[in-house]
Image (cartoon, rainbow, N blue to C red; front, side, top):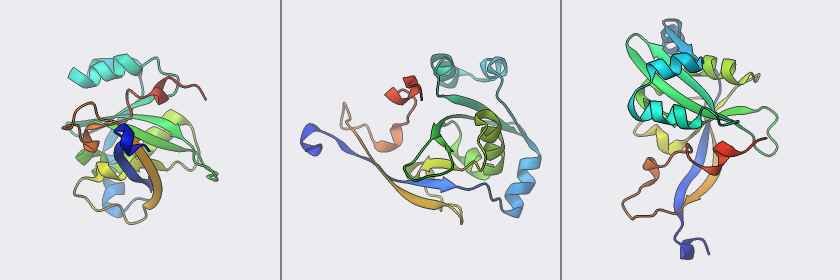
Length: 173
């Protein structure tokens, strides 16, 4: 029925990333930092990311984080994720500004999102399409997450879609 209406598969699984670092990753996280401050985010972000922050800063469910390590930065937007039968809430990533930085600094992302969202036992949920050519981390759980989208034009592909401007950002839980 959905394919007759023009919907296409967006995602089939989500990766749940527990906060268990490898030695190299733990070492990298010591030399990084993060900010949750809206003022710092406004000052540090540029271009499209500044627009995203401005547009979603009043969202009741969006959590904004800027990760920094050396001279690189990665802007993240996450929402509180919940699954049926899941006992622990998790951070569901809606936007990753620099995917390579994110995957190389997962522990820094865990620390920042833990602080931003205030949940214990934080796991990060990331759509598997954001892995790119990378292999998933060794302890990542692959969970089914069937999602559909309806492209306005044929050239719109799943990797071009994120959760930033979906109805989810305006919901209150």
